[in-house]
Image (cartoon, rainbow over all chains, first blue to last red):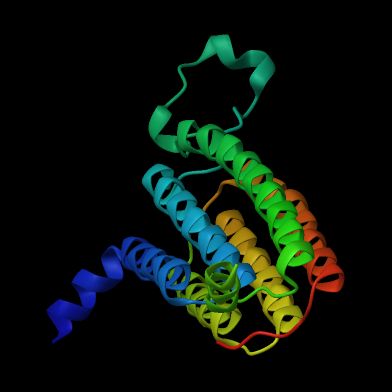
Length: 131
Length: 81
C-alpha cells in the first residue's frame, strides 16, 4: 500500500492531468447545455497546459532567469539549475488560442440563443425537427 | 516545489472543475470556472512557470470570466443538467 501511494505521489501532476482531461471530455459529450459544453472544452485545454508545464518542472531548480546576467560570460551556466522554459513559451501561445476559441464559441452561442430562444441541445434539435 | 501545497491546490482544482460542470445555474458555473482558473494560475506559480501564471491570471481567469458572465446576462441562466 505504501509503495502504491509513493508511486502515485511521485507522478501526481500526471494523474491529475488525466482526471481533468476526462472531466472536460465528459462535460463536452454528456452535458446538454451549450455553455456547459464550452466550460468543458476550457477545462480540457487547461489540462493539456498542466501536462506541458509538468514536463518542464524540476526539483531544486529556480525560475529561468540567469543570475548575475551581466557577468554571465565569466562562468559557465548550469542548465540543471533552471526550470526548462520551452514548454512555458509553447503554453503561452496555447492560453491565447484558448481565449480566442472561447470568444468565438460564446459569440456563436449568443447567435444560437437569438435564433431558438434556448440553450439546451435537445430543445434546439426538437425545434429543428418541427420545421 | 512544495508537495503539500501542490496537493491541496490540485484537490481544489478538481473540486472547482467538477463543481463548474455540475452546478444548476450558469452564473454560478461561470464563477466556479473563474475560481478554477485562479487555482490553476497558483499551481503554475508553484511549479516555477511565472510567465504562464500571470498570463493565465489576466487572460484566462479575468477575460474568460468576463466573457462567460456577459454571455449569461445576454442569454439565460437556466440549465437542465
